Length: 168
Image (cartoon, rainbow, N blue to C red; front, top):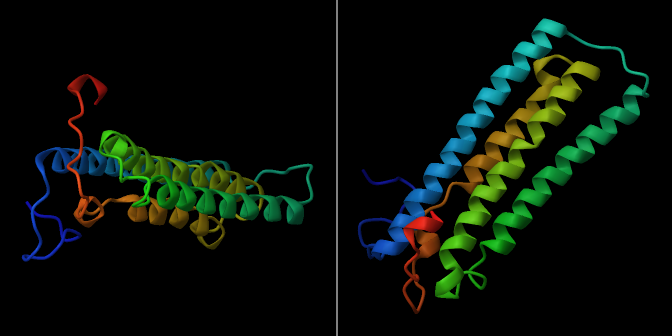
């Protein structure tokens, strides 16, 4: 089955090692997205079951801290994705697979960190959907942005080094 994010019919197929790396990375990113979904479900049930809780901190300060944390999570995930997985960092064939994998799965996993912040926001500040939706959406959007496409592994001068099965 071809992925709609892959290049069109005129594109050259990936080398076998790059294709395996792409498949493994996609699988792990999708696993993170499944964990995101289950975490959203769990936090929704907790917020609904427990409802708002009283906190000693100033609600406005806590709101600013949690929304600032959401920004840090989003920026951090994008930095990991773009810097660790940039073309110049993937140029070395011996480290291409590990860096590609780490950048995409790392960005998706960092995106998951928005969910505990959203749970805290929902319990302490605003339990309504409008209050927690930015946190839930951030985790899912970062997971979607971390989902790799074949184009990212095309056009290198040297083929990807063969990775041992024990490292996978």
